[in-house]
Image 1 (tube, rainbow, N blue to C red):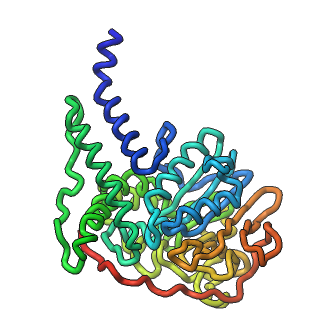
Image 2: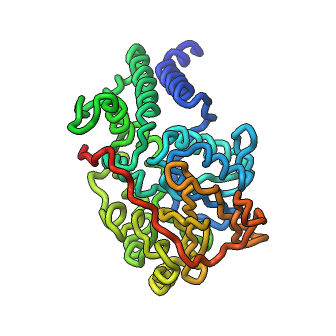
Image 3: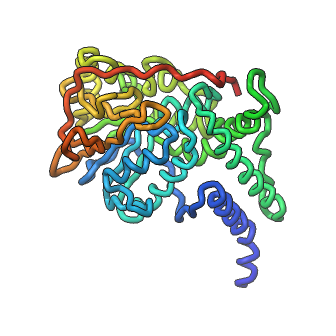
Length: 382
């Protein structure tokens, strides 16, 4: 009987082994079991300690610096935040060469945090959606090696699975992807194809990581979003937004509203509350939006680089946390927003000029917009 059970489960065991083998070859680490599930709720109660980190843009080193600054990881890069909730507001992709390593690293932290009562919640940014749509205009050249390495190991894993009777034969990773592209140098074609395969709708990386992201989130009194939320987004339904974006990434629905993910006033692209001088923050619009979300007092967003660091606008109702820390942005010093029962809102900063590590969130007088992405890869339709 025991032998029958083992034989019956052998294909699944082989598949699990192969997946673990591929993960290790790609990242050099083993992901702890069990895998993190997709987030199924949009509203969370206030935790004792809540932290938030802005755009990471492919810089693993700076990402880890920020996490250590908030005592969320230890010297061995393991979760040390206990029951803290961490929110990362999107834009892991583009501008740096460690995009996959960050996605895997955040997945590891999700699993480790869950075991000790903590929570790591990740959001989609506009750059996640751009890449799913095949818009690679902000990618860094170094991505070629990272995605090609992943694709090589993923293909090796699929070939191993094809040798096991009882397992469904894996689909060709590159199915439907052209072998060449006008305007793309030959040296980049393989990496370009690998990136499309990984990040397109239903692609292995999009399905495994990006589909598990939320697009909007409410934790206690704080609303989190990459760009911003307007009253009509709330009327549309925050849970509905999360569900439709997730289903679009996984292929359960064919389209998702541009007003959610693509237009200037979408939740991923909006800058009404984060752009330019403080007077440009539309306070009345923000207050109206927050009033439509029960218990909400503030909106916390990334998307627009704040050269002076994390700051507040609109009478402290707009908290802007994208400090451009990636070397591919402005190489800003890492900062983390902390909200706790004991100390309220604080900035944890690595900036020695600010003298103190813990600061109250200041009101920002001016912030500058970063330059546009250098176009070296044209958007494509896939």
